[in-house]
Length: 104
Image 1 (cartoon, helix red, strand yellow):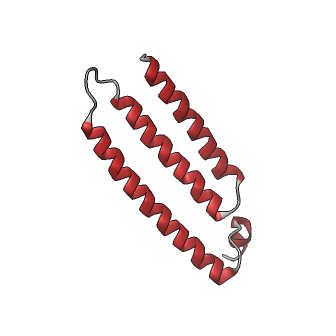
Image 2: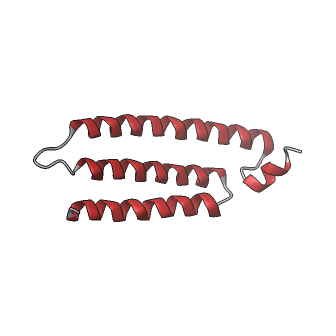
């Protein structure tokens, strides 16, 4: 295993654990969206790390895929923030536990 790939994979695992912990522990909708964004960044970083396996050159295909993923991640988070804002305007809370009680 390449030493730089090991560095990337350690960073990916650390980001993935932080993102999952944020999703499991936090009950605020904005913090959940931040956890999702951290998971997206971990996926992009792992893809970039694996693209370094080719020796001698930088793979432009991986860069283009990651740029598209960054744009799509940004739109997902923007829609999530818009939904969070509408939920707050309507229910005056963004706590997930309080919102779950409203469905019955």
